[in-house]
Amino acid sequence: MPLYQFRCAQCGPFDRSFSMASVPDAAACPDCAAEARRQITASRLGHGASTPMRLLDATARSASEPGVVSGPRPGAARAARPVTTNPLHRKLPRP
Image (cartoon, rainbow, N blue to C red):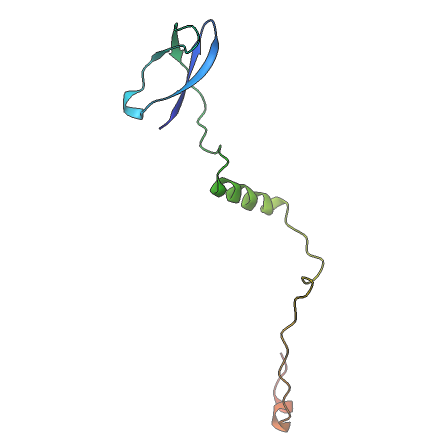
């Protein structure tokens, strides 16, 4: 359910969660029970600490701050090239 911000004249802003179909224009302040009007705020679609959000942030960050690689990983073996003894293979083009 979406989170809506309300502002009490005495206590300041507070958040409440309502379904989109039944959001009121005013709500009771949790501290003083006075009527607080609903505020128009920016949407917070990109906020979160979930694993997908961290992955999206890391992907976006890698576009401007790529990881630098100085060499192969330690212990990573290179694929061995097969050695042939067929003399006809010497006439083939090399890659």
